[in-house]
Amino acid sequence: MLNNTLAAFYERDIHKLAEEVKLFKDEKNIWKVYGSVKNTSGNLVLHIIGGLNYFIGANLGQTGYVRNRQQEFALKGVDRATLVAQLEALIPMIHATFAGLGQEQMEGKYTIMFDDADNSTSYVLIQLLLHLNYHLGQVNYLRRGLE
Figure 1 (spheres, one colour):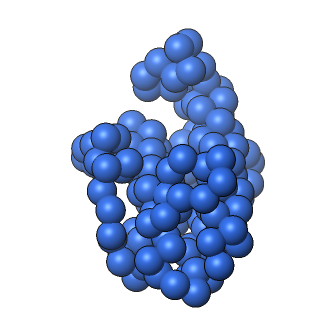
Figure 2 (tube, helix red, strand yellow):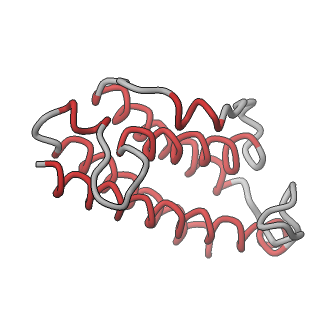
């Protein structure tokens, strides 16, 4: 089932993102920009945490998460251990949420407008995974450029 495949990809890539955060030799570099990337790795991680908690947790899993997107980019200096713990906390939430999604819900309309259209839940979940991968690449680029 698509749910299980997507959950496995999310888990894999969240672990990769957590590993990137751990690989920074100097923790201060998590909060620096480099090259053409205008957001810090820390802010990109907070953005992924906020986005997944909102779009998957709150909208599909009914977790009650309230997103503050501005804070994802304004907050600075969160320590590495906290970022990693918040990333790792996404995995059980994603597995639990995906386990509760049936085929009809996956093919049906997502709970809110997404990409300025009424898209299916499966479309939204694939887009979010692609977005996670995009920012994973940026964090990797930043880490290598700043070390």
